[in-house]
Amino acid sequence: MKRILGYILGGILILFLVYFAFIYFIPYSEGTRSGELIKFSKKGVVSKTWEGEISQGISGAQIFQFSVMDKENEVIEKLQEFEGNYVKLTYIERYDTFFFWGDTKYFITAVEKSESPHFRN
Image (tube, rainbow, N blue to C red):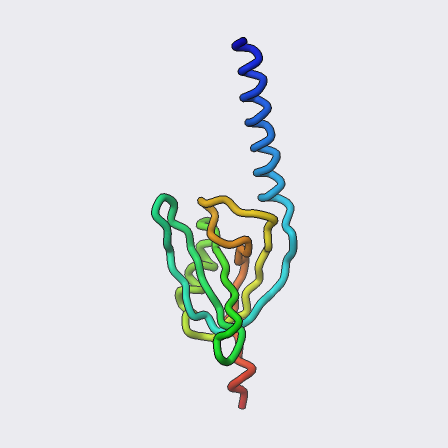
């Protein structure tokens, strides 16, 4: 009986590890988005994660929500510095997420300040 229980628990653990590796190492898509950085904060009750939003339209009707992993210190610092400005974000979209990574499936890997197309000279 103990042996069967051990096989079942071992099988569940292996399935979880395979699922975790799939989510972590295989992105669904990669790309860039630009907009005005309107929100960036660390939030959560059990696990604090970095979450943000950019507005991609003049009226703010199109909002792109994203997460940043804790290991991305340079990205976090730049996002805090550029809040309220127009930015270009490079992201990886994952198939799914875990509560300790972030609220969204979009994870920012790079950020740069950009010019707004709405207010060009």
